[in-house]
Length: 113
Length: 115
Image (cartoon, rainbow over all chains, first blue to last red; front, side, top):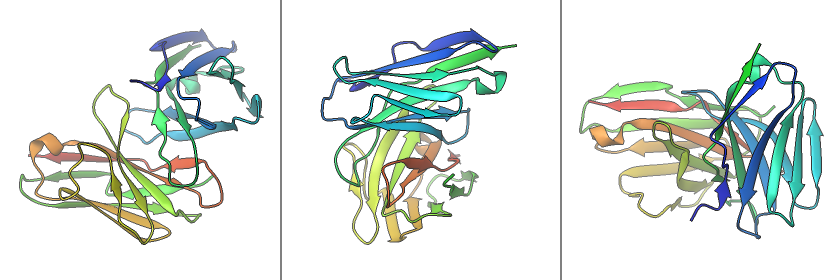
């Protein structure tokens, strides 16, 4: 049973426009969510995170929105740049230190110039 | 931001040999480190959780005697693939959780090829 789902395997966006990456989760115990960007043959790069006590967190071009009632979060990238082209993973966790992340399967973002 | 290094980045070895991969948190202390494995076109698969000074916790289906994990300090965890076989060829990635927070930072990964 997949607890974190990224239902769109790919997304194509034009440079300068907004990229919206979606993620759904099923485990109501999750209380912390993270987004990572990953290039082939590299480790994931941390982008932004959000605690379940918030509904929005912003860092530069990246904003994460959390809708707890819908068990849904999204990552907005504005404006999108060609260098943003990568695989984006949504991850969730709960509880105290030592709890591992549960990852979605990723969404491949392609930003064309 | 927080930096996690892995060494080596690439390793090719003969079947039957053991390979050690190091994971270091360079600018923060990590009470907990995690080891993942990624197969082509798949998501990261958690192998084990490594806590400083105690035994690692392995996920179901991961052989603890084959994948030895040592977390001897707050900045270093090692994964040793013992008696490696071709099916162990994969991309191994570690992550470290900042002791003061909940964000996790990943290393660049180690590509293992067993001939």
